[in-house]
Length: 407
Image (cartoon, rainbow, N blue to C red; front, side, top):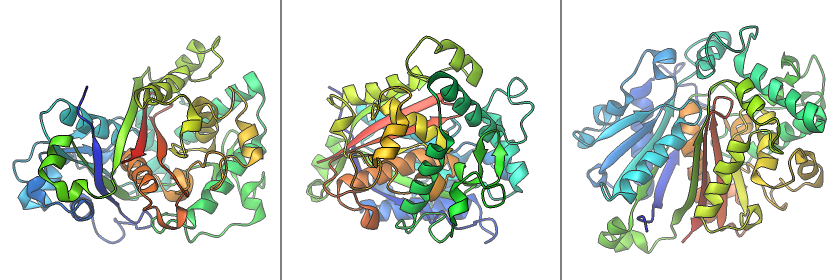
């Protein structure tokens, strides 16, 4: 059996902070995340054996690459600690966590620091959208789009509509729920935002169209920020029984699938499948199987990738909360609410919480760990013992799912 992997602690920056406006860059962001993560885990830098950094677009937004070297640049005690950067678009953080797990399970290292770092508010909104479009098949899809990713997820909504029917009011309800949840999250980007009834309707003034059928509140935010977790194996805990006595979260299961870049290719291949994105369903089932779970009802909550309301709508049926194409039922029944059958994105997710793309997968794991150890604060799901996560990159080109459970 592979080495068990435990989550010793973690940290998230305030996603409302504009680091560029404050005159800060990757050095300051990395320093805050490293120090905050190690402090929460009650470790010194010398305890870290290896570092994995999730970052998607560092060069495009700031010109800075080689971010595996940034932790040692700003925290001298990490000098000579092995480190690497991982890029998988918005799933970069999830892939970094998988790489850290593999190091521990293989016995190469016992303590891994996983960082997700992204700065996006260095340019205008239009330019940011152009940079983010690099995660599509450049020059082959979305060439008529002003904003690549709203365009692509509007196309996914159209495909759902074609196969099953889709009422856009259900997408608006997803947005309203996530913005509402974000108010209780002290690190959420939108926690102080105000909305009107028109903000969640087809109101061209209060909620204008961005691309296709997606409107302003259907979209996640351009965000600066970072998150970190410390992953350790059993050998490490055997040497540190003082830490092993603490309530700890453990990664119980994982799934990882990668397919081709174009959305059209994905939809063509799934034409005869009940799931619009069957590889996403299989990644989720892989995580369930490795965790020894029967189905989604063994979870107490989910943090999922809602880069757009449509991506959460798709996650609902791909997790198995409803049958294929029936996500609307869970929305209408209140199943996704805190206190409902299966709370989804109690943190506010990406739409409400913020989406620094390389950090999102790490932040999800951190929030899941906090939930199952009773440390989620005002957005705690009462009695949570198992939480799922789903982190996607591009039009689900890279999919990473985790199940996190309590000790």
